[in-house]
Amino acid sequence: DAGVIQSPRHEVTEMGQEVTLRCKPISGHNSLFWYRQTMMRGLELLIYFNNNVPIDDSGMPEDRFSAKMPNASFSTLKIQPSEPRDSAVYFCASSLGGDTQYFGPGTRLTVL
Amino acid sequence: DQQVKQNSPSLSVQEGRISILNCDYTNSMFDYFLWYKKYPAEGPTFLISISSIKDKNEDGRFTVFLNKSAKHLSLHIVPSQPGDSAVYFCAASRHQGAQKLVFGQGTRLTINP
Image (cartoon, rainbow over all chains, first blue to last red; front, side, top):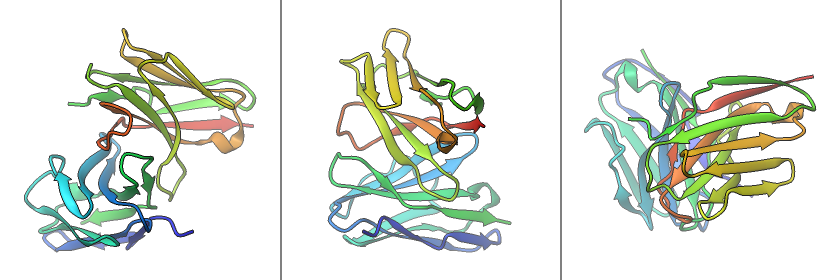
């Protein structure tokens, strides 16, 4: 069974560039989460969706960050413009309602 | 403002001995707690959880203890095995089934042969 799929796995970009991270949740799951992992703060929830609708985006750090979920099988997290402090590992996770969250392998983002 | 704190960034334990990972939280509204385990280049995976109505939950070699008055929980692994080497994240939520999880910074556990 395919788990949560994220692409790209690694992204290196220059400051000021637009970055788009992609996620395909587990088929049948109706909730999707975007997290960011840093050494200092650990795993932080950025935003989550239920049935493709954003429910809580209070963790999105700034207006430079945006997330969409156009359908049940795809979501994007966009950073525009990117800054060096956005360098982190970004995880997508999915679940069936309030059940266990299943995480993807993450995207390691480096902004130079 | 870190609501869930894991104050030990790393821990090294001999194979066969007990590993104890600690976690503190500040928000008294948290009612449900989880531990996730993460290997390099993989996402975190759920390990064990505990509701605030209990003070202990056991699953094989893994036991989680909760001290609500101290706002403290710990994960015990007995006996520790080399495959347990990973980063362990503590997480908290307002109730079981709540989707919003607050994670700690993680503790890197290394089991030495």
